[in-house]
Image (cartoon, helix red, strand yellow):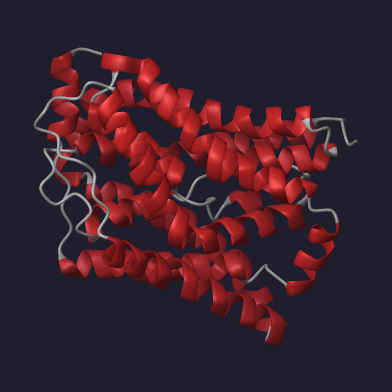
Length: 315
């Protein structure tokens, strides 16, 4: 990628007024509530009787994915702008995506494991998303010989904690309680909310980039390649770790999908709805990477799940 293209991508400006951000926050909270409707406490009991796959899933998502993303961003060098590299690290620091459970069901994976991993990574995101982003983001900015005008990445802890807790923690808790005490309501709402979440994210991306559609179309082929490579890395981490650890094939499928599906909607909210990047230079590259991830992982997740569905391997 030329420096001119990288500069064009970083100059893409996406802003949201208070009403737009409130709408996004409310819908994202409903999406997480929908995810939690499939969670029943007894699932955790069954999964934690054999905790190996749960621990491997946490290793893949919370440790290996951010660390390997940092190395990938370094390896890409000047082919990406520093802000695009930060966008990759931000996505890798987010918890599992809300559609991973649907993908796991389609791919004949271990659904209980999938739901458990989504719930655990979402609960831990309150602390680990800002920590991983701060750790690997600053390491990247210092190691990649970024220009001196890029400031140190400082996490406004209360702002980020409050946002993640409100958008993920509270809906997750309410969803689990609904599933436990109002199972009929939970069953009626579960599938509609899954589809709403997909439509919502696509609409959010379209609205966010409406004013920058020309620049977005000019750079999409570069963004496409970067996100494709990054997503393949994420999927490969899950599959490789499951294969090396010799877990059952259904668990291997789940680890692949869970590591490859990220809650990039949360990443967009953190960029647009908090003071995380106050004082930063133009960072359209981060926004475009995060937004395209949210679209691409639906495509890649459906593809991988379909391949798994048609595979004859079950053990």
